[in-house]
Amino acid sequence: MFQKIAVFQPYSVFDYVEDPAMCERGKAFIYDMLEQGRIRPQIDPSIRRRRMSRRGTI
Image (cartoon, rainbow, N blue to C red; front, side, top):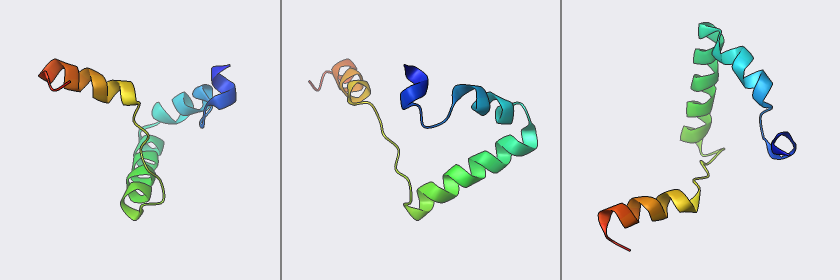
């Protein structure tokens, strides 16, 4: 089920992470797209709630 909804197939991600040159190229691509506003990070709302509950702001 995870692979059906995954944007990147998990097995292909590891192929690129192990090659340092490809890893750097991939990170540069992601950072460029973020700076250009072409992609946005999607942060799970439960992470924000956990951080706020630790601070006592909930």
